[in-house]
Length: 227
Image (cartoon, rainbow, N blue to C red; front, side, top):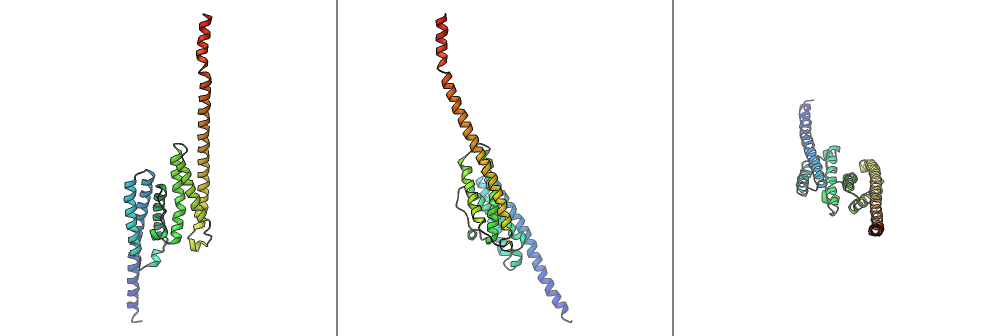
């Protein structure tokens, strides 16, 4: 029992180091999530300089988070860390797809595969948001493009039929994505039918105006003949 104090001191030191690393990681994860959220907001508003700045800060924080936890893999794979990196994936993919750029992959983003797929699933919600913003001004082929990308994402997610312990709950996110896509498809279809109806009414009005127009001189001539 003489070395019990020495053993307890070593354990205490290990816990102190891990606690400090955890606290630092929590702060970095919160900052990373905030920058990702601001990048997404900027791309929706069409503010590209702000978007690029926020993404740059997010990249730096993600790299710092990975390096600071390199000696603590259990903390790196903890829920709050991977949740922040999932937001990082979502922000980068959302900004790329909305701007019509190439899809960044897990290697480029240095994201774990399960984290990448869960981030990809949440992109569907942001693309729906973008579609609704577009449809507020009427039907647009851009909304169709985004819907196609949403379908492509779902087509991949639905094939990842693995236990939740492997995919970190991807199945639930896939079900949510499917529901979002169906709602968006309905919104776009409704908008497209409205566009067709508007055009049909416009064409009918033009035809009616064309039919009424020539009769006016005839009426004038008829009136002059009576006089």
